[in-house]
Image: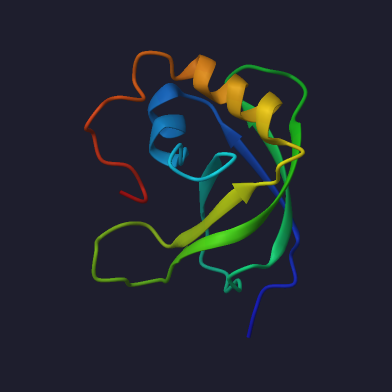
Length: 113
């Protein structure tokens, strides 16, 4: 069974949460979204992302490239990793990396690594 929900809405309000969710190692960039709903690898999704104190959400299209099932053995939250589409890459990725300037080289753990 998979989720039919193809549009997700998320708000990330602080730098630590953004750091934990961002996946800079993914081509075009990506975000981990906590969820207990079942999704399929490769499933196309749309994301409405509100960052920090910005008023307008960013509309992002992408596909699911990572899943962490509920009750996984690695003590990480369940959810999905969304790879940004090539068309959405530059604007969203640049905005996220501007917020995370100086922290991307950190060795702190994230939701995925």
